[in-house]
Length: 230
View 1 (cartoon, rainbow, N blue to C red):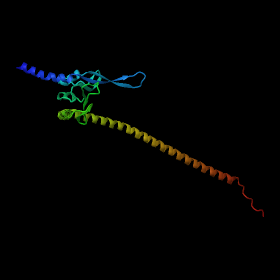
View 2 (view 1 turned 135 degrees about the horizontal axis):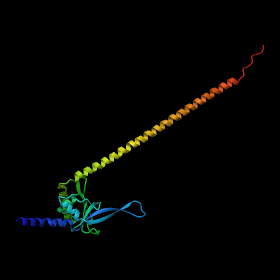
View 3 (view 1 turned 90 degrees about the vertical axis):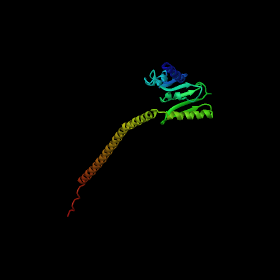
View 4 (view 1 turned 120 degrees about the vertical axis):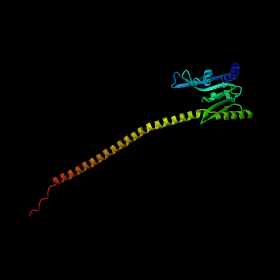
């Protein structure tokens, strides 16, 4: 009985797991230096998603976030339908953008991207118009995803708070420097004004002294008129 139950569970779990890794790749962005050109260029590279997806379904290991030191930017899976399945939710719940297409190399097929932003899962579809039934299924599937428990909202808030704190710290570091510079400039201007005032006062004093000396010299050189001879 136990063996039979195990076989039943495996028959249920295996197709689900296989459906999630079939035709899936992870997207890595690698920076490459170009000869004769300043800076670096980002080039996308694609790796099999088997290890990434396996880490999601293994409760004893942490979710794989990078490969060869490069962060996983997205997951791409080729499917017959551009509507994500319920079995895709564990992948989507990692917060890694999840992309589905019938053929990523063709512009004639649709492309669905599912991502988490502003506290909820969102979809972005590009390609031929969806049939009414498919569009309704897409909307319904997204609503189901947003009803599932996850910790992405908390992580997003923490990330935004950290970003805001870093920005605030940068402003606090820059502000005293600007105020200090302003104080130095003001002090310098005051010193210049004081020196200018002192120079003006000194010039005025010197001019006054010169005038006094001139008057005294004139008085000394002017002979007294002789008295009338009686």
